[in-house]
Image 1 (cartoon, helix red, strand yellow):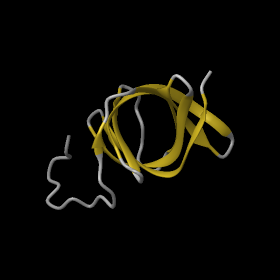
Image 2 (cartoon, one colour):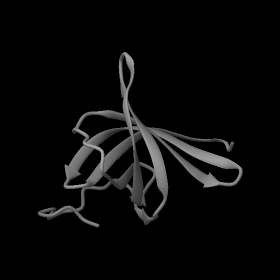
Image 3 (cartoon, helix red, strand yellow):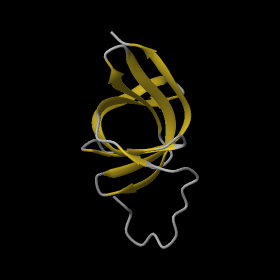
Image 4 (cartoon, helix red, strand yellow):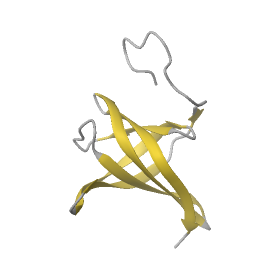
Length: 101
């Protein structure tokens, strides 16, 4: 899915289609400020595009956690950089795999 009026692709890394359910927390300097759920549309090494029903704002910091396999979860932290309708683009600053539960 592309954002309307995007005349030039500004992405710094190739994106790969991926539809996975995940949970996220909205972070603040005082800790967790909210939470929600989403479904990824695509991912790259530098970002995640997803849909959510949760109201988010550009600049908010998120921690995203998704089941990657039976043995691992992907945890990513990043900043909301664009929003269009229910589509949210997050630039990731940190990603790691953690042992699954």
